[in-house]
Length: 219
Image (cartoon, rainbow, N blue to C red; front, top):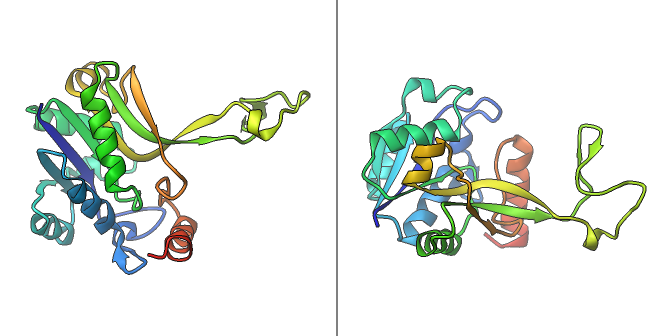
């Protein structure tokens, strides 16, 4: 089985200017996931898709391959599915395609390896992704989705809601070709803790990540 990991890291960001270059507890954000993927040491090839010379140079020093980001894929209208489908068509020689993001700095090498091993070892799953299980009271607009307000359950008994961390995705080539999506129809959901689930999308997220990394985990 031949596997590849694709890490999109663009230089522009609308909500948090220069997000991937921001310093988080002494290191630039893009360094975290790159180093953790390298430490996991499970992929045949690792590609960094970028429109930044700095990141391209860093990728080469790490021993990764680089992909020049297509201008249309730097737009806010482009999403993770668009990127992975593009990578699949440009690099069709792999059995499994993984996608990870610089915005998930605390995703650990051990978790990457566990997801990799679980997906490749089982015919039960066609894809995988990392997630959290949340036992809260959730609403969609003005509609409750996991409980009935008139019959209030204990929080520990409430139906858990699974939330993607948008940190790691993996999929078999056949499922990717068929569904053109980074998640197939039989995904393995790997639950991670709140630390690994940190996802940087706003200035507030950066502050929370700084606090969690420094105060709670001593980074």
